[in-house]
Structures are given as C-alpha cells and as structure tokens.
Length: 112
Length: 113
Image 1 (cartoon, rainbow over the protein chains, first blue to last red):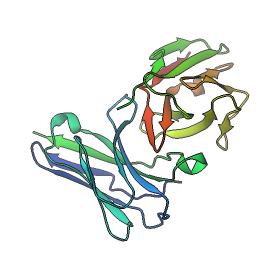
Image 2 (image 1 turned 180 degrees about the horizontal axis):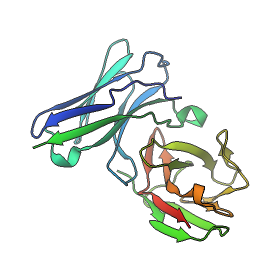
Image 3 (image 1 turned 30 degrees about the vertical axis):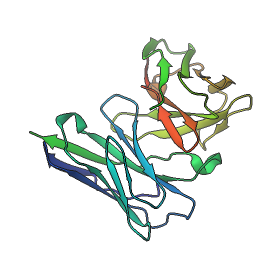
C-alpha cells in the first residue's frame, strides 16, 4: 500500500502557483520523498525528490516539513501542459525499499 | 534527465499468442529495472523487479510463468506476456533506477483480441 495521502483533485489557474500537498506521517528516517507526474497515456515523469532539505530544480520546488511528515510540491507558474496526475511517493534507497509504490495521486487541472 | 525507451509503443495480438516488450536505458546503465502495469483509470501497479543477470522478483499475485522477465544487460530488460488473454490488455510501463532516481519509459499499450 502507498504510504502517502494526497487530495484526489485540485484546480489551478494558468500562470498561478500550484501547491500540491502530501502527507507521509509514517515516513522512516532513510526514506526519500519523490514526486512524479503522469500525463494521460504516457509514462510517469520524474519531477523532484528530497530527503529532509527543501529542493528546487527547473521544474518545481519541494518543501518538506521539519518533522518530515508532510511535503508540498510547488509549480511556480502553472501552464496548461502541467495538467496531469501528480504522485507523491515515499521510498528508501536501493533494494526492495527503493521500489516506487504508486498511490492514486492528485489530478491537477490547470485552467485558462 | 535520463531516457528510457520502450518498444513497441503499442501492440495488438490474438488471444493465445505471446508478446515481447523491450525496455532500454539509453544514456545510463541501470542497476535495477522495474515493470509496472496500469489499467484504465487506475494507478500504476508494480509487477516485478529485475537486476541484471539474476532472476526477477515478482510482486504477490503476479504469475512469473506468464510474465517472463529477462534482464540480459545493464541497459536492456524484456517482458514477455505468454499465452496472452484479453484480460492481459493493459498499459505496461518499465522503469530503470540509477542511484536514488528512477526513470520511466513511455509505456506499451497491449490489446489482446
């Protein structure tokens, strides 16, 4: 079973920031938080991952709370092409702990 | 980011035949490759994990004799669906891991008639 809880759906206006929350209250000390997204009928696309520090790359920012029990993925300026299902996944490094188990994700709809 | 390819992107086959799907990591060597299946309007479900040169590890409920996985090199894994039936029709997606990061292929749509 997935170790994360996400809202099933969210809307966001084009050009605004999209903030996608994720709860992972049972995360272990050696587990990372990963974010992927899946646009309809395509393979999942890697977005970002982090352990305990906030992370930023060209796609998004990841904010992890100090107790690591929740995180937020931020898309700073959402576009229509960001409409997708976003998955928050908790997994370890290597071995079976590194297997990515997908939950139901959040369906983000970016509207003009 | 790293690129993972799959071939074919879609395939239609008759019931009872076998189908092979290839997964390649194009610009990196993957220590571990994974196979997922996704039915319409559902999330991805992990089928099996494979390491180069060793037998695949299958998730509970996945028939290893039906879904044959071969991981012959650090850049290639194949999934063969043997004696396919209409209920095997699905979207099959592979992924490859390098370090803590995992990259996914574009998926293969299998339709069994």
